[in-house]
Image (cartoon, rainbow, N blue to C red; front, top):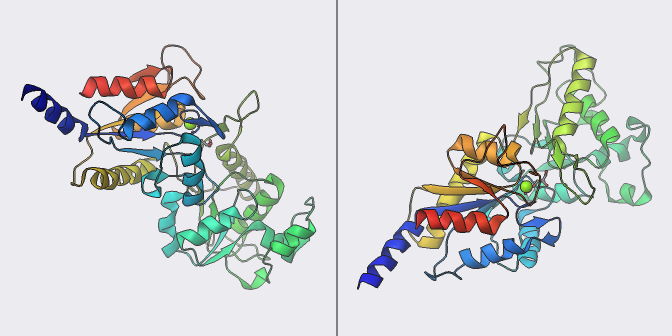
Length: 343
Ligand code: G3P
Ligand code: MG
């Protein structure tokens, strides 16, 4: 009976726990598995002394693919099932914007994958920079436009279309073309190409960025510039050209809107796993980037664990944004410490 009591007590405690995982630098490096990542997911999916599932979600600043395609790819690498119901990419919360704008410019990503993402989010009329270059190649004077790109783009007379908002979903593959088109649109009258607004502010269309990371770790020895660097360049150009500051909205970690969204996803995922509604309490975020994962988690009141398998390569803890639960060699060390503390 005593053994039974301890078991039920632990099960109750586990029901109040959940984990939030960053992906790049915690579970994988690009397409390469971090072995402790698989070990942790095996454990949380039921391979533990209690034989029960411990809820966890994924919160990544990664972008550029539909959620289903990305979860299928990650499930293979991590050899564990990942549902889109427990998965948030940088642009996932931007789904909510589909009801506010009809025609949008979607920027970034490989090929036309971000058009696909936007379609799936319910955006009705999606324009990508290639559609505009195909209509008027002189808009991007240094661009070499291939026949294949021309064949797969959707040109129209953009002097007859109002683009209502700009959505930067993923990293730009061509800064010169994308920045030129974005600046043209920001300076136009209500998003109509070929016009220049008299007042740079009142007729300016809104611009949204899916995340703000300055740098991203890649195969290159030092991290590469990411969407945050692109945005800062754009802001500086816009200010120099118009004399006014560019107002913009940024999603992704460490923005609070993204953490709030994640909190709702945790609650509904916990309900799916445990079959009962609970307010998420003991949430542990495991991340490798103090400037996004950790600062956001700390501000949102989560327990934060910083791992040494990604961006952070410092000493005992990060000096500016220290993880409040501690620094760990890898995700396995972080998760098992959290379980020891809670159970
Ligand atoms: O910096 C962009 C992205 O690759 C970071 O992903 O999973 O570490 O938030 P993640
Ligand atoms: Mg990371």
